[in-house]
Image (cartoon, rainbow, N blue to C red; front, side, top):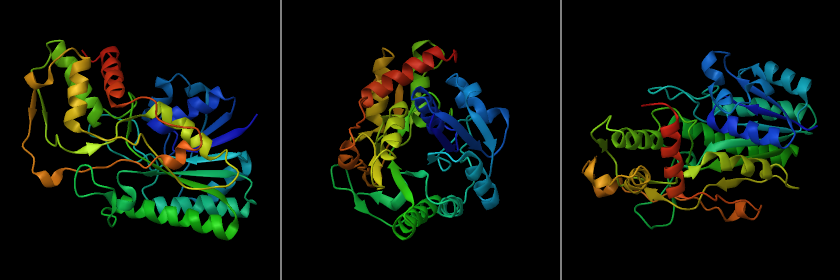
Length: 319
């Protein structure tokens, strides 16, 4: 039985990846920064909490990282610790340590010392990492400098991975992942707030919804599908970096309209749209041609994601 280690297993992506690997008969280990009850929310929601071997670990602790890898010796390691965790409204915490660069270097150095037998996948944010934005809708994605500390950290981590791959022959890959949604997101996530409002309004529990940035454009992927992409990347003969997403972008207004339609409502009757200057408009879509050559693509489009989020909110007992 193959063994996999998920660094930052307590978030949305870690939980779905764990479920995927278990279905493929892996023995799954996972790390989290603490053992609080909240840390297990996503795993419990998927009914797999008792099938995961969890370990409390900070990636800033090199000796701890080295000891864990030496003890488990997993064939595959997935670092999802820079992704946003499951949580309550108002919480937007990273799953593990905020110093992504140092944590990544600790893992890479441990792999080098242990002989490079393991395969390593590092997650980075498509919307933030590397500053990929364009001037307006429909224009090609253009480069812009990183504009926040997390972006800088992710960019440096990506450089470290390329360095260890070339100099020390470490099998390490970066996945630049664009926006994906699911019921496991925190309560304040945009897609969840819009879907929840639509369900509440349809039930007569609420009067309206206000959206402040209707022209902002993003991808609307379905997170459970993405685990297969992460896995496929580590099954290749040679390591490489990939962009993972739907390749299609829609505005917040378009997603809102789709969500309200799924709830049986005309969004224009219930949604207050804030006036927004044209310069806020963005076109942001992933170039997925490389990952598609691995046989993967996102099957569920924006309308499907909106409908699934509305269905989930109906079943969640929020009313």
